[in-house]
Image 1: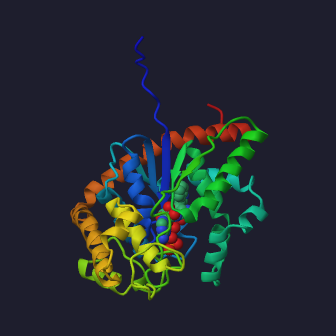
Image 2 (image 1 turned 120 degrees about the vertical axis):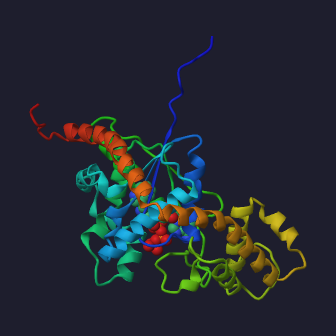
Image 3 (image 1 turned 30 degrees about the vertical axis):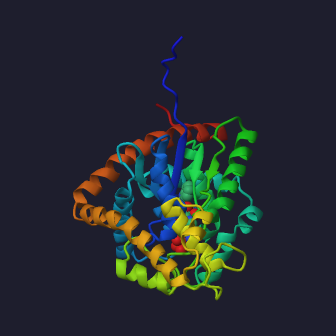
Length: 338
Ligand code: ATP
Ligand code: LTN
């Protein structure tokens, strides 16, 4: 007998902070995956602007970065019809659930988060409470939508594990409320390293702009940055220990072309690092060119961008409210009369 019941698609959720121009690391570690997943999953994506103020933001630049990040995500291929793509601060349930989850998370758990340790070392003059409890807000983002899968780069794995622990804990104290999410970390690209210090992750907040490629760098800038990328002295395109710089470039090349490391080694056999760096630069330039063209078009149409995020907010809100109401009821908050 034919079964005509539509199969309920699994839900994917992820977010990214609109704190500056996205890097090639953000793109290969997370954003590229966001786009591909839209085919087979019910996807919810957002700009995590509430998270962004854990580091001080200049109001005008922050507004501008948020709009620009929204346009960039559309330019990459996030489809605002197929997916729900909204801005976190437009849906108040995030902040509300985050408060509740704060009370189900231990000080010790938050103290172990490496991102907190890194960021508090980097911003020693502003170690605010939001920076500390940030993983509870991230857990709220995920759990509000009952996400099955969360595509992220490797650096977010620890936060996702905490979200799973919080979900398990809450479900255990009350009754099953939250879906316990799984991370989706790509095999290649999960940790793109700095071009200047390949033992550190590529980060958009690095002071040395030669260490990262942004999605808006010109072809000239991209070629120059790859040519200057730090490598070793072996001069043989081979993946291996002690070759962090070359491993990173091979990872980038592999991620974009789909070639395996063996195929890349064969392709560049007998050729030096110079040739290889040029080839990596060229594939990156070609990958980014159509995205940049779409981005420039979208940035000219502010009304369209506004329409997209304004329509997405109530769609997100409808899902989030349902979960939040359930949580409030289970915790024992007295509901309003009708
Ligand atoms: P910041 O430098 O401001 O801390 P960031 O560049 O690390 O920012 P996030 O906004 O924290 O970027 O990350 C957005 C997404 O991109 C996350 O899923 C994260 O795991 C992924 N990501 C960030 N940097 C890299 C990287 N170097 N390689 C792979 N994925 C990355
Ligand atoms: N913490 C993430 C951004 C983020 C996120 C989320 C990712 C906020 N909420 C929910 C996945 C799911 C970061 O800094 N990269």
